[in-house]
Length: 355
Length: 252
Image (cartoon, rainbow over all chains, first blue to last red; front, side, top):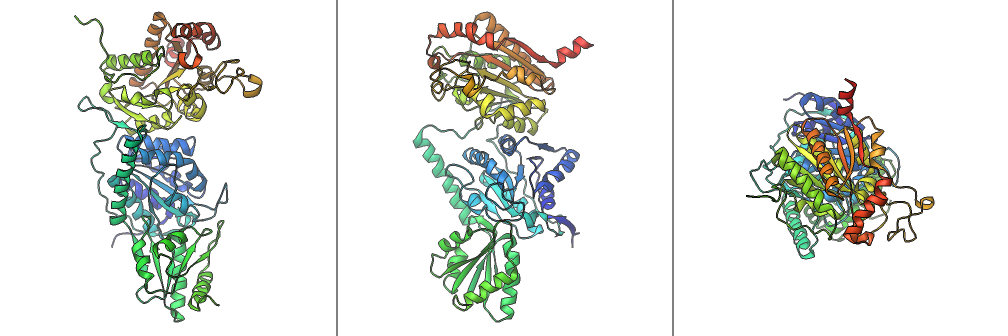
């Protein structure tokens, strides 16, 4: 068995990115993810890579755009308010079909909000990272090990589909320390990128990286083609984990830290004889619709456990086609639900909504 | 015998620029310099948002279209992707470089980012139909300053070369214009130097080109060229604002 080391989630992301072949990182300090920048600042110069502290989140994402245009693996990271600033760049990356990895270690909002963990950027990540019709692949780790694994996966998917992968973590996941094993990470080398704007070497016609398309018929076709690619991703790249779902009467929907908390509540409820299980989406986009749809055939209700005012709950309702009730068990603004709170919600659901 | 031909670094695409606009001259000068230095195969150009948004169609080197004002940040990424080989230039107007992209401009200069910036200052927003620019002159009438730019209401124009010259970072800053044969020759020299500096690893080199916009200034092309002499140059004096290598030579 390979050696395990104790690492913070943020550091695991940084080291996994280096293992994935990322040699360019651009960022701007913001709590609770600054360890990523600090780690990169230390490591990159020693391995011939480039760490550069940008003057703003906007500059950082545009530096990412530059390196991605040149065909190399590249990343930036931030936390909620900073991701809002990156929104413009995310849209341009999508419009120019450029691969990149963007990490959001979420904190409570809106506005400057707080610095404690949150999942309230779910809508932003899965619906509206910026203007225009586009998607990002959104990966939601629930352990430090997964922080590392999904970082690698994020680069690979970004390259495969020429788009942005967003690692959507939260302050808890970023700050907590767990044993992590990096030696076993498998990395697929980046594919050939004949589209890259890295100099013609006078051997080919010039490449153009561009998101401008003034002829509506042409722009429509570009959108259609992009959404065909998205449909392929929905069919092939959806990831989730089921826990005790076979005989479940009640289904918890939770990702990231909320899934960690919920799992304890599920175990306790099972000890009390309540048939409860959990579906943990690992990709938030594409959302794992199939397992929720299937669960709706046999569960009495769903409970969406979130660190927000209820955002993923909309996807749970859509996926389960509202065939059974979906309730919300949540905390917001940087607060985390306790296992007891989730257990209460389970007991209530088991009693048909009565305590 | 060939006496005049198109530089190889320009494509065959016809320019979309208005009659009398000086973008075409500056494009040609940039292309001539790329040819003369033999760097087309390793050059990547960054187009802005503004009238020259479609510059990516006109240069034969690899081209990137950036978000409004972000060209220096994009250029930073492209340069850092392969600092030994990539020659990177941005081509930006005054709204792009001196208004929405001011932070990117200042910080790429402060870092002495080894890139070349071609800055077209025509004192107006051309693409959107003639609004007040950060470089519009006091009293200048535009669509959004219909009674003339009132400095008490919306402040003063930004003098980019003067401002950046206060930074320790940048290698080379020069303001030129292209309203006469003599001035075009000087502009060519400055653009050549700005690219050569990058090839030699010297750092951030910006050439500000006072340019014309007859369409939105509401003038004939000939009058527009005169307006540069009469109104723009007095406010934006031509000349070298910083040349660190030359200064070092003098000191030595």
